[in-house]
Length: 189
Length: 214
Image 1 (cartoon, rainbow over the protein chains, first blue to last red):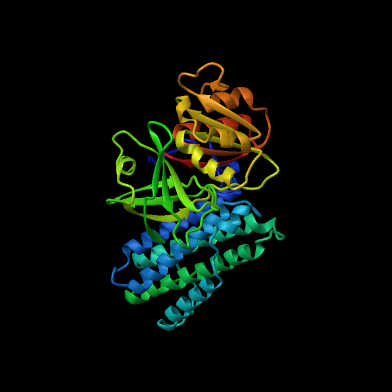
Image 2: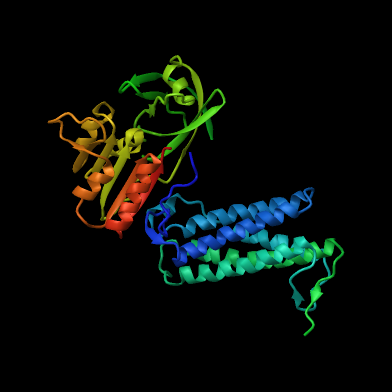
């Protein structure tokens, strides 16, 4: 079966909940950015030392979460299809916090603002961090008008997850520079 | 989850299409409209489940594809042959709505709609697009459940059989009143493309759910 369907050739696409909307709709922006972030995580995994199974496993877990998150963004509020979707468990936020704490404990404390960059793995982690923040902004915009949605708690978890995820990428970037013996690039105005 | 089961029956619906009956494994659950994966001799394919969740056996409606791989095997293997299935998966399920449901299937794309009708869904508009009348499977059952049933024949259409001569997209252009609908499309990719673009053009505000077979 070919991957192309030709149904999007005129600028519209279909949500999982069936609506046909234009490709510049905020919902498409939001889950398109989730996809962009997921691609960047994939690129980051590709340049990691492949014997760092711990980091690769953690990042693959993030990719799985992002897929789940994207599915939620592809259904309109209170669509019956929401009942068929997997949710992101709050424990995934706890997992991110454990990863953050573990990585931070391995490094000297941060004392300055730092510029994104350094080793390529650190640079890619910073790209992931900033795209994650864009994803978060778009998710906030998407869910802003629906505080009474029946699955509002799922949306809250998504926002919380994205907020924590960008912190994880920040700490990961510092960690990648640290293990390569590269100093953080301090901001010196 | 993978299950191993043995074929319990094969029933030919026409020269090219048959139903395959499998015992429903313990723990196997599905919603009408979903599909499963069949694996045999290293080949795997997805098929829509034509039986309703309430029915005892699992039933698949399969077209024997010329030069096909799995369909040719399934069409000719002995009753009792073992195969593996996994599933059920898919989001192509009926969504309760205030909008009129329009089911559009081509060929064996009728399968998920048969499952939906068998599980009690009724009052839909149904268009079944086929090349010849022999492929209008489940016609009586579907016509009984539908508010409106249209057999759309792209090939020869014998007079007096109540068929629409043309493709499903031709029917929609000429026969369906403007409005907001829930379209469910199942079948070949060309039909899904044509009807989806037609919906964008003439029935904007409608929802479209689709399941592509090839």
